[in-house]
Length: 261
Image (cartoon, rainbow, N blue to C red; front, top):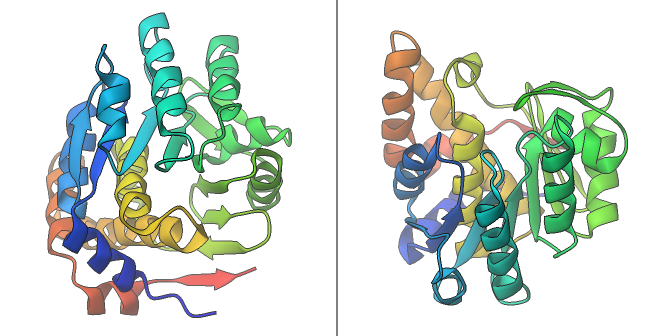
C-alpha cells in the first residue's frame, strides 16, 4: 500500500474547504486557527442558522468537550443536516467520564458520523472494550488497535484513536501512525485541533482511512518540528501553527512514520 500524505495536503490547500464546527469553548480559537493553518476555512455556528451553514460547508466537526442542552441539540441538527451530504467528524471528548457525555456521544453516533476521532480511552469506551477516562483525559485501553477496529465495524465509519501511537481503521484496513511529540500533552486543545485538521482533510478529500491518516500525520509531523523550535509549552502552540502552515510535501512524506497492521 502506498501512502503519500502530501497528496492529500495539496488537495486541502488548493480547495480551501469550509469546515463547520460546533466545538468546545476552551479550544474554539485554537481550532479555528489550526484549521486555517492546515489550509481550510473555519466557521463556528451553533445557533438558529446551524442547518443552513452546514448546507454550504465541506464538512462538519462536532466536539462534545463542553456540553449543554442547547449545543447538544445544535449538534443533532448539524448531524441531521450533514448526513449523506458532507462528512461528519465526531470528537467524543470525555466519553466514559460521565453518563451525559457517554449518552451524547452515543446519540451522535446513532446519526452515522463518517469519522470518529478520540483518544484511546474514549474509543475503548465507545467500542465496548473499556477505557479509563478521567475528565477529558485518557489513560487508554488495553488494546487501542483492536478497539479502533471494533468501533469502526460497530459504527460503520472511519475511527481514529490517538495517543503515543495513533490508529486509524475502517473496520478492514488498520494503519498505525507513529509521528508526534510529547509536547502535545503539555498544552490544552491539541486533541481538538487534530479533529479540526481531520475536518479539513475529509472536507477536501472525502472520509476514508487514508485522508484521516494524512491529516493526523501532517499535524504530528508539524508537532515534531514545533517541539524543536519552541522553549516550552508557552511557545509550542504558536510554533505548531507555524509548522503546519509552512509544512511542505517533501518534508511531510519523508518524515511520515506509518505501517499497515
